Amino acid sequence: MAFLNVSEMDIIMWNQIDPHFGDPKEKRTKTQAPSPAARFPASDEGWRDAIAYVRQKQPSVKRGGMSMSNHICTADDCCTYEERQQQRRGK
Image (cartoon, rainbow, N blue to C red; front, side, top):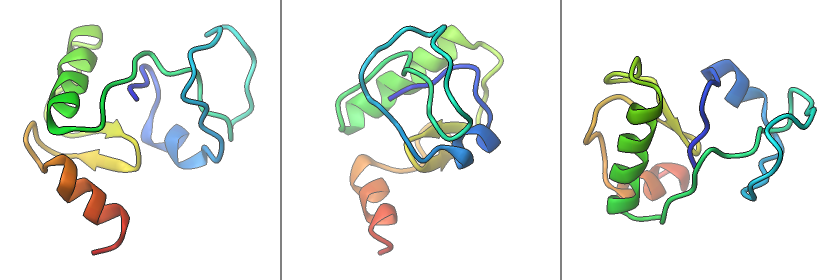
């Protein structure tokens, strides 16, 4: 999922993430993630597509600071989908 116009602090507060598209004007609490701007397949290609999408929508996003799921990417090719899955499992 890709979220636009959110900070890392916003993401840290979320304990509810609904992957479905909803009304972006809908009022949500600090613990509820906004509706995603886009969703991508859980694969290396999906990851690259998500990075390209966010950069197109927010040209100020450069290397570092891209938040996808629970992983903060620090480079275009920081890790593969499988490596991110291992990070989530704590391996």
